[in-house]
Image 1 (cartoon, rainbow, N blue to C red):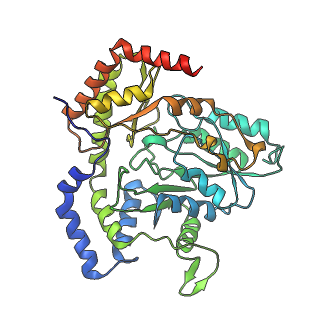
Image 2 (image 1 turned 120 degrees about the horizontal axis):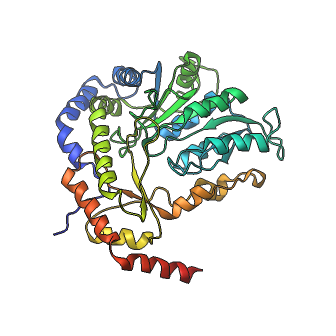
Length: 400
């Protein structure tokens, strides 16, 4: 009999922690601390303590966090920011929103994070000694890596490049709460500013939108606090352009309660990833994710299909009651409006290929081990069928 395993579901977590969370929400209601106040401050302090970072500045979403970080680092019109094509759109759209140009550097084939060798190669070949792009005259000002699926990018190399060329770093850790690099430095500490999302499906999720910036620079922290509140330095003393982007008290209280369990949530994800790795490692027609840089917290567990038609594979899993998803069906370099100047267009063949072959499997922390085993066993059974490869070849031949 088939089990029913959705790709993601919050109901089990809600049922387990609802009484504790309701108590926190009731405290906010009793104190009427809806915007700002002690509950927001308490969460910011606890989040800073957890990450061992000096400052947390909460806001309305991970997208706003990225916008605020770029604004705080003074991005100007036509400035170039080097980033990854394999990510959620916000890591590039906010560069564009502030008048800059995202330039896409292809990803590493093992980690799916930005390829630091290609990053350095692009700078050396495309820019003059003053970091001005030869074809456009635009200036390169920063690097925006993404800790994709919960694994830190190679910040040792990224920092070397940034320091050599006097570039700032914005670390997009929206998928990586609790991850750390091989030196056990937590995500949130590698950039001049780092950004997090608390969207409900994230490893640390609110009951609505939420996000934050973290930094170890007190001047940047002060600027971020101004920017999130209309550029206000003090009461009715507005000194720069900002936005209205504040984490509300109810979301802060929810996140503060969940923060106590984040290591448990992440450990479950790691446990499930290890089961998938063990049970699927002998299959030749899938490529498993690699943990090559410290602690991977598996916001997503994505496999790469080799010679298998993705639509057929996902449909067969659906028939077994197993939900799947695709992250990402299209690279950001393939989105027309993000390619702001054709002279900056850069080939990203690894990312392009991956968008056709990647599949995300269920890995939310409230799953049971028997459910993970069921998913893995069904994959093994499906891939043992010769017809799935035959169908893939047939379709590919027809397309050609």
